[in-house]
Length: 202
Ligand SMILES: CC(C)(COP(=O)(O)OP(=O)(O)OC[C@H]1O[C@@H](n2cnc3c(N)ncnc32)[C@H](O)[C@@H]1OP(=O)(O)O)[C@@H](O)C(=O)NCCC(=O)NCCS
Image (cartoon, rainbow, N blue to C red; front, side, top):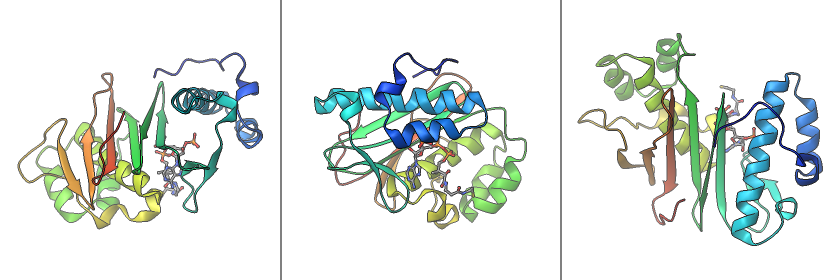
């Protein structure tokens, strides 16, 4: 969903106390609005699927820091960047999603050197652009967010580059996760990962 520049009306009645505290802790309004808008939408989406009021959706953190439903009724993940947030929901299988905005990573080569697997670095050399870097980055981050580890799970320990070229919408299995690029407005890159055993993803 697009992220507008104002906090949505009624947000304080919908977010939980820890979420309101976190919102209050942002030093920059832009970060606060992004956080509040994303949580607001997330609660409305999950509440709609669960048949409860958005404020009644019980969100916990798992040990790796991934937000999860307290009763595990649905799996979900979300990501936000400048102007855009994405929410993924799955039933009975972990899901991870990432979105990044282009035009911000002039240092992408150094990041790739540090965080990408060797096969990915070789692959990126064929078409060394920020867009291609973000294509790989979002796939990797989606896998690590599905696993619930975040970046601590080891970016360099697996490979999301396909041997036969750059395919938008590519689907392949890595670490047991189905990973695919997803369509987002121009100027963004996004990817989704879901544990391969079950594939009901919205
Ligand atoms: C969690 C992490 C993957 C998020 O990446 P990001 O690009 O900054 O942010 P995204 O928009 O993609 O995702 C943010 C959302 O991920 C979710 N998230 C947080 N921890 C998560 C985890 N361990 N697994 C899955 N999802 C997680 C939250 O819902 C968060 O939304 P919120 O900020 O509204 O609560 C990343 O920040 C991370 O691994 N952090 C922990 C380690 C760290 O800080 N390293 C410093 C850089 S090396």
